[in-house]
Image (cartoon, rainbow, N blue to C red; front, top):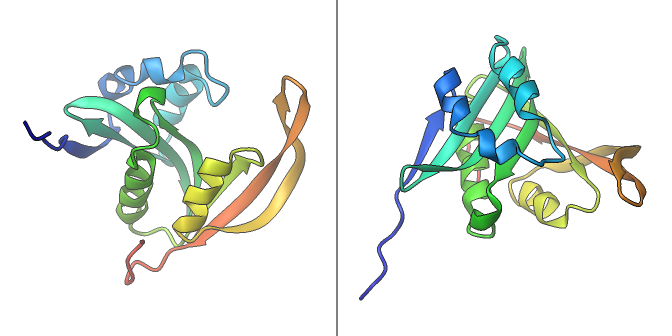
Amino acid sequence: MPETDAQIALRALSSPADLAHLETFYEQSDGPSYGFLQGLQDQPHCRAWYLLKDKQPVAAIWYQCVAERAEVIDLRVLASERRQGLGRQLLWASLTALGDVGAVELEVRSSNVAARTLYESLGFSETGSRPNYYATVNGREDAILMTLALNHGASVT
């Protein structure tokens, strides 16, 4: 019997009820806390989306947008759903949905090779670093700063 494709849908995170569906994403996390994101959602500069796979949330992305710049605050895919292209799909869809933003910035752990590869494949370039920025169990780790200039007349690949 052939497998059927999962139904994937992008949704704007626009209400506390939407956020409640994502609470398990942020349990025992080393990224932004659920409480931090609850506060961020109330800010006018916050834009966020989540990806549904067969009507279940599997990934989320958060931005802070000021003027024509956006900063990725968090991109998260459920551990059980990683390595399936969902992070790439969510990032691409959200970059398209940002509309009036001319550049997107982010920081990523220097050891997070999978994320850095994803960002580079979408056109982000390394623009700097923050030495010893992240705490680790073995000490500290650098943050790599990356930027993508958006040209909404062209497609993100």
